[in-house]
Amino acid sequence: MPIKQNIKLAVDAVLFGYMKEEGVSVLLIKRKIEPFIHQWALPGGFIHNDESLEDAVYRELEEETGVKINYLEQLYTFGDVHRDPRQRVVSIAYFGLVKPESFKLFASTDVEEAKWYNIKNLPKLAFDHKKIIQVAIERLRGKIIYEPIGFELLPAKFPFSDLEYLYSTVLDRPIDRRNFKKKMMKLGIVTELDEKASLSSAGRPGNLFKFNKEEYFRLKKQGFTFEMSA
Amino acid sequence: MPIKQNIKLAVDAVLFGYMKEEGVSVLLIKRKIEPFIHQWALPGGFIHNDESLEDAVYRELEEETGVKINYLEQLYTFGDVHRDPRQRVVSIAYFGLVKPESFKLFASTDVEEAKWYNIKNLPKLAFDHKKIIQVAIERLRGKIIYEPIGFELLPAKFPFSDLEYLYSTVLDRPIDRRNFKKKMMKLGIVTELDEKASLSSAGRPGNLFKFNKEEYFRLKKQGFTFEMSA
DNA sequence: GCAAAAGTGTTGTAACTACACCCATGT
DNA sequence: ACATGGGTGTAGTTACAACACTTTTGC
Image (cartoon, rainbow over all chains, first blue to last red; front, top):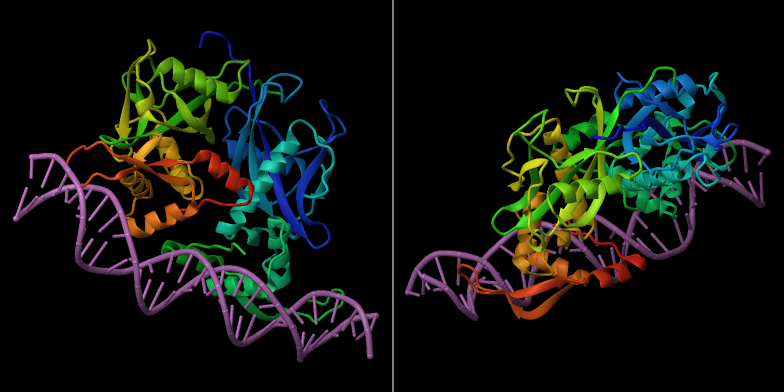
């Protein structure tokens, strides 16, 4: 290493949430500083010398927006030489899932505004953040089939149709209601509750369901694998 | 970013190869410099300011070992605060597949020796490279099922049993020969040649086969998905 | 002729797809 | 009464798992 290395390291987070109003959404912030001031971007920032990569993500997110993260994993590292106009910045992107009901968004002093945007209706984004979100959506799509992470987006109790709608939105294709329910229930990790959904809008009210996480981990240890291809 | 960031960025590569003698193997180098001098490690090194992450991998690999890479993708970024004893180094690990027949390994001036090690018989490794290899093996295992990357480890023409053995080694479980062949041939991307394998050791000689890459891409565009779960 | 590896089919079972009508509620 | 969304079963098809004997070659 003869030449001095001059590269900065940052983390960015693509957080997904699901809301009745907005559907499947990504959390964005409006920047209060240059570069790309007043533009929408992913929450994130530079890594401190003495913190792990994940710690940096948690710190930035709490600082900037007040979210509570339910699931977090590393997504991909973006290192194009000119992705930041100031100087070279390599960013380690994370992928997270949150339950938007369980906290209140706020904007910190570094941030003008924090807001959920439906994944099909994103604004213009700073840096290469559009690309990062694309990669995150693909990951979500691939992962929701083979792991029960969809439940990390829903409240503890949910009507079955929310689960159905979530899958159909993320996979971007219609699903057969009967087959989907049959398959999901057969896995044995979703329990039907003896409780009706509170009536919003018209239609017959349905029962609420919950995901049985402990049961899932128990089964998983025995070689069970979740799969919801439909 | 008030405090000065003092983190270095490196790349490491986990390259897999398949040889009749060694089986499924990883390319390792013996270090000629501190830290961990004279220990085995993954090929890799620091990123230059003006090169992309992938370019850094190609440069280091060619410099150090002379391999020709057939397939390369980013694996994961390892950023534990103390993973390097000198100072903080974040390493972006890559995952690659090579055909060991198609080149000759050498050791550069930075490296005492470059050698293939069977994945079940690894030596003690420098840094957190053992962990990196574990992650790479899991990726290989997950990926070989859903994408035809196994062929990137085999020569253009191969006996069917090599393919079978490759899958059974990587997946670490026995496979049913008849069902495996039936399924693989049904996909329509492997062609049987009119050529016998050169006779090595005893047994009935079999035909050679080849992977039809163009046909695979053609089918893929039409929505075809490769899958070899058996 | 013996050891080693290649070649080859069938059958039972489980999973998947496609598909349409009735029910409970709010307005 | 009508609009909205919830609930439910069957039949045909396809994919999967299990399984053993014969053939060709080298020694």
